[in-house]
Structures are given as C-alpha cells and as structure tokens.
Length: 177
Image 1 (cartoon, one colour):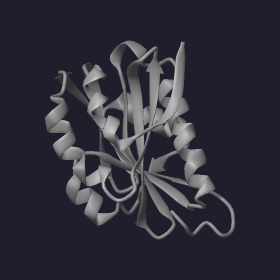
Image 2 (cartoon, rainbow, N blue to C red):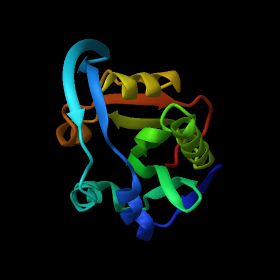
Image 3 (cartoon, one colour):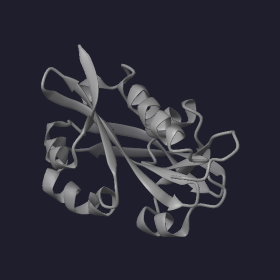
Image 4 (cartoon, one colour):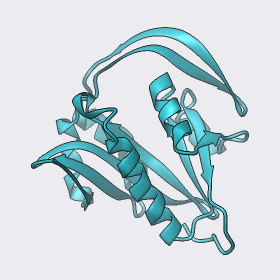
C-alpha cells in the first residue's frame, strides 16, 4: 500500500531508492508554445544520487517543500515545490516515480498534493520544466499544464532542453507563492 507524506529536506538523500531507468522512443522539442514530437532512442540509466543532489541544490534552497510516496518504508516517488520563482508563481521543482511504480497514479497524487499546497499559498500559477520525454510531457499535459509561450529566462538557461510548462489557477488574490 502506498502512503504519502511531506518529507524533511534532510531526507532528500533517499532519492537513491528511486529507480530512474527508462527506455524512451519519443520526445518533444519546444518552439514557443508549440511542441514537435521527434523520434529518439534513449536508454536512461540509474542516476548517481550524489550527482543529482549537487545538480538539484539550486532547487532545494529557499524554502523548498518535498512530498514523498512510500511503499512500506521505501521511497517510490517524490516531488518538490519551490516558492517565489516569479510574482505569484511557484515551481514544481522535482518529480520522480520509480520505474516499477509508474502509471499507478503516484505521480498524479504527488502533483495534486503540490497543487493544493500552492493554492493554499494563493499562487496564481505553477511552473514546471519537464523532462522532454513524451511520457513526462503527456503526463503534465493530462494534469492541466500547458507549454509556456514565454519560458522564464533563468529556468530556460538552466534547463534548455526541457519543456517549460505552466498551470494557471483562476481566482482573485493569488499573489503569494
């Protein structure tokens, strides 16, 4: 049985428990708000947890909030929220689900938890730089994210190959991320 909870930043080293492997045959390229589907052949292997932590340091600073999905005591998925990347905007900074646990609603549940948290903080929109694989982009699209017609320059510089997407929330007063 899968259970979900907010994680402490000190638990981030548990990402070593995530099986990141994936074989990809389709990916997207972004041109403004338009996406082009391309054929690829990528065999994505397991990551080095320490290398990922070093790379993610930019996301884990400044009040990042993490949620995890657990099977027993084993981390099978996680996501992170970074506030204040622009006025009224938060960032879905990290999202991974282990290979054996994908397509079971875990990523959707984690994202829904993050979206609810963002709405409680009265953000107007949520931004994500999505890995450009078809499965990842289609997942975020199914949740209501749309390609950003004007990606945030600092995130585009950090993640030039990713698909930059935005989910906007209706309602007045959405000013605090």
